[in-house]
Length: 217
Image 1 (cartoon, rainbow, N blue to C red):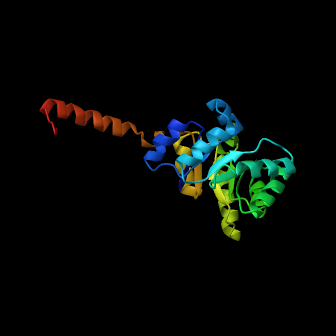
Image 2 (image 1 turned 30 degrees about the vertical axis):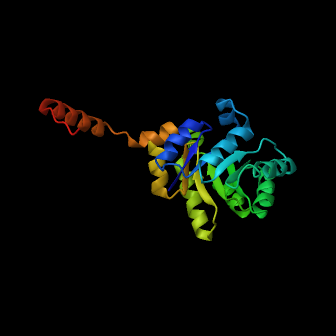
Image 3 (image 1 turned 180 degrees about the vertical axis):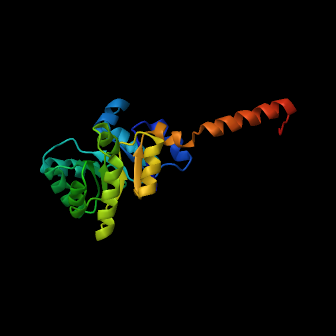
């Protein structure tokens, strides 16, 4: 499973990238706003840092304007994936941009039917939002399973990019049901290394090392 980092913070991306934990990056207007950077400037810097797809989201809502913005965004770097919302206009933009050979990430997906439409429109990635479904007492992971089944049934090449990841358990469950990609904040990805028994064992080792005055260097 591929790990995309959901942030526009350069230092956080660089830290994970140095460890080989970054297969791509996803951004959105909210993340760009949080970074305090110009959208084109920070997106170019991210694209120069990582080799995988970097999702950059359009801000328009009608198809023609989305297409124009998408064409502008792909000029930034070869690894740009244009991010469009799962609306009818977004699907129109997806069809045109993917037909021109550009990667397209269709976002804000909340149903398997929406995911089916995105695949038919040529999406490179579909981004179902797990956490936001969980927030309204629906099963976000069930959506990932449904999309995986449908795509496998018909051989769609669109990759399932699980988004709105809130916890390490979300990532584990996505891996279990076969999501192609997860995108998560840096802190959630780093939390995969955490376990109380690891902490307990390390504390015991350190106590024994100190008691025995063990040194290597």
